[in-house]
Length: 173
Image (cartoon, rainbow, N blue to C red; front, side, top):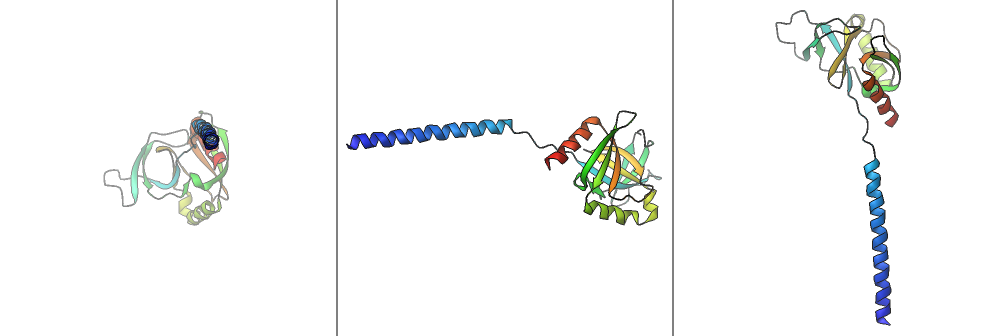
């Protein structure tokens, strides 16, 4: 009698162990299928043309050389270390293809970004200074606002791959 109940317990334990291992293996296989989150680092910074590239950059600014783009002329710029906008500032977007094959992002901004941009634009001289767009460490565009933006802003100089990654990162978040 004791032998039979011991056998039932053993069979129950082994069955439970097998079922548990099967669940673990299914879960482990699911981990292999999981995709890595899509990320892209975007920053928009105040900038100004560097008229004196001999002296060190002023405190809070870095010197950046731009080789030029469809919208930006080549030259040296001083770029603030402080961003006005980041990728987190974008709540929705539309992508447009430019004649040179690059992409323009027409971004809808969140409330915090609209506030920062409104404060920046309140000084009319800031509408004429370039904003520097950095994408994953690459300086993509230097262009002025020219008028105070509302809840949307166009960002220029994206590659097709960068535009796709930005779209995907918004879908995930």
